[in-house]
Image (cartoon, rainbow, N blue to C red):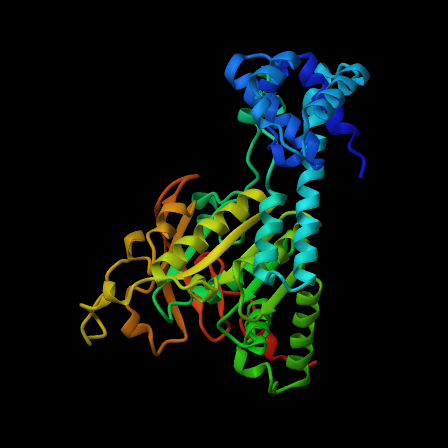
Length: 429
């Protein structure tokens, strides 16, 4: 291995001791053992005396030298590095970033070798790769000038706009948000997510992590949303025309930017697919639902959900993605509802989110689906629901009514849920 960059940096640190104040790379980045030993000596001396002096190294730190790192050999190497060093003060940050990049790359390669040799598990491999992929050197490159600061504060954030115009306008969801979509069981939160997926996949790469339904159920719902055909007809069309409309819907979905993963997931497997997708542009991620994500650790449900939500938020910030995370609302919040069909179900709040307060704390936006007359609506195929914007870092909170067609699994704003030809899918050729 070539250690020239290590020796160039060490030679400059010996010549210009004040550079060590700017050096933020760990000693482990020096892969040559002698170079690492020299750097630790420099670091120790500078901390004690604010300078680096070769004679004082010998006088004050002679007990630090060992059989492996003998005084004469180490001092000779330092002198050689000082005599051959090219002043790099103006490019010092570049040099240490290069050194750091090499260090993280070697650490990742070692992890891959350990995995291939079965010394670590797949999850441990992904944890290590993620750790080093997201490490960075905090140099002065992160110090912005006036123009750079102005550009950041004056630029408009990129919004995620969808066809529910009122919700889209007031929720004001933006790229890199973590959006919590929650509801009591049977309210339609998965259908709502699939409606967003079907709409947004025209403009964005979209991933749906499905841990609750079969693959058939997911695509039946998507076709129903796209074609407005009741799902019961999808595997048994009554006419050739209906069959052609169903196939047209399948073609529409095939042309959208949709990937569906139908299996159990961990945060690591979710991250891995997000990394792949974001190489092709901003990605909208739907996860159904948080309670089914496995982290393979012996934790309480509260601890597990808390850790998962925090990690998903880091993913939404670290990578070019926006995440919609499905969650449940505690059943206890509706336990006082009586059997009368006219009885109103209590309006949920963000405090009713199940399993962890981290959902409320970490989510940028929380959308709560509320079926006000859930008992009365249970037998209906078309109902009015409310979308409660319970938390919103980007805009207003409030309640927006929305129309839900259970047979077609389609949500619509009230202004456009009635089509001009409501039975057009029934026509013969």
